Length: 342
Image 1 (cartoon, one colour):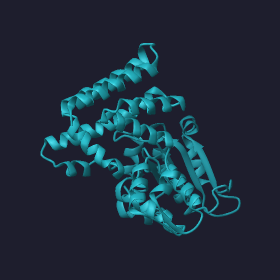
Image 2 (image 1 turned 180 degrees about the vertical axis):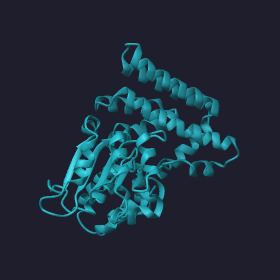
Image 3 (image 1 turned 45 degrees about the horizontal axis):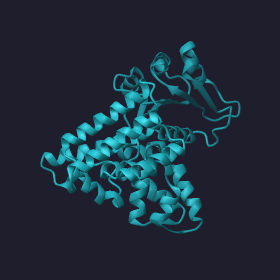
Image 4 (image 1 turned 90 degrees about the vertical axis):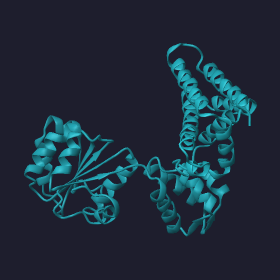
């Protein structure tokens, strides 16, 4: 059984009684862990109860596949249904899971906490094919689902957000559900009382200031503003940011420019192209992004990406100072931006 869409929330609150084992997997490990906890709490309110909750590592199942069935059939000394959680589940868990699902004895709810399992994963295929099993995929929050999470958490604490603050939060959260909740909790504590979250409030609390500086660096580089780019680069390096991380942040910006420019070359308007970028361009940087699309032809954006990727390779392989390689690559891009004209 594949659980998705509007079926997920009811399932998390009350899993199908006929479902004996559930695989929760995906790249958003914060969301995976959150859903595992919610499913477990649908059976046991206190997950610290050692009599009703058992946790197994995949390595133990690999060594002893029968252990899973033994735990699922065990009876709690204090009474009540038990939960068995298999942590870090991957294809090595498939033999034990197969044996259990072929004959699911006992009444425990068995939960498999997996990583980003591909379509060819034997564990994933097993859970997709068994009537007594269910599978939930967990991908990073984005778009409407991320906005709904932000609005719901703020509302629970008597808060609302200005439109520009909500846009900023949506653009800077979402990679990991647990981290998103932590950042929003920090914002809620900062606000201190009911009210409206402004853009300044959101910027003050949410996201890594280093990442904001990296965004500034990417924008200044694409603008052709060498002085600002060099100043921001120096600050990032002084704060301990690695040259590789800095290069990759600039690559991300130029890849978004390249994608938008490609869409425009295929007939989309600038606004249509911007509308297809995820996450959306932060509104305060939108005008600069539009100007950069005018400044950078598609072929020069391709060359810029090659320069950045070559710089990362040089940082890793040549033994030359990575900071100087990074500075030289960014200087080449600011010069290229100036050559294109406005």
